[in-house]
Amino acid sequence: AQSVSQHNHHVILSEAASLELGCNYSYGGTVNLFWYVQYPGQHLQLLLKYFSGDPLVKGIKGFEAEFIKSKFSFNLRKPSVQWSDTAEYFCAVNDLTGGGNKLTFGTGTQLKVEL
Amino acid sequence: DAGITQSPRHKVTETGTPVTLRCHQTENHRYMYWYRQDPGHGLRLIHYSYGVKDTDKGEVSDGYSVSRSKTEDFLLTLESATSSQTSVYFCAIGANTGELFFGEGSRLTVL
View 1 (cartoon, each protein chain N blue to C red):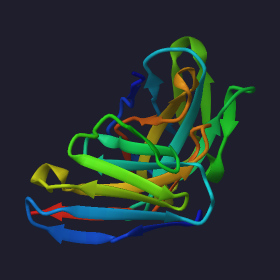
View 2: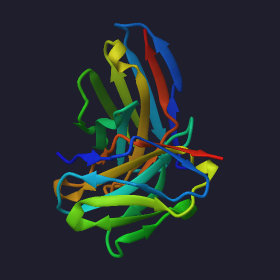
View 3: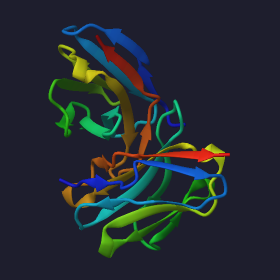
View 4: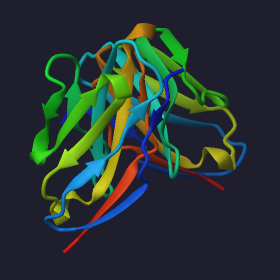
């Protein structure tokens, strides 16, 4: 079964610092890739998604992610974080090889942005 | 926000009692999912449904059952709740692309 690794469990940054969160999935094939965000006390919301085409995808609030197929990676980036970006971030993979009906999530990265 | 309603939003129960969580959607999506969220584990799939009366197990299905008698409703049942089932439960709806829309969550505490 597909698995997803997020290497950073807790990240603390100052406002205006750059952000990169790592995400790797376990094996190749055709996949759809996602980053979800969960603000404190809220449900998960879609941040961005990759289905095909340009491997650099842009999402909401200035976030972007790059799909590198050879590395099975889909890292999330933001050039300058804000205090309001404090949240938990989840990478997720939908393996279309197996029918594509189930999302597998990473364990999440807790981001805290300090003023 | 997608039209997903979970109930109850909070529940405290005792070990050994049955519990049913309800997910209701107004979006007519074919796929519905139940996940549990626990610190250090992220979200783990319990069960999902790909149509009325069509369900399948996820990675942590032991101790849980589901039913979907109507497109709009997906019920998650804990036949005999245990303390290990204390968690936040999220319902999600979506297409087979994997893009999901999540409900607000149901926080369950089993004493």
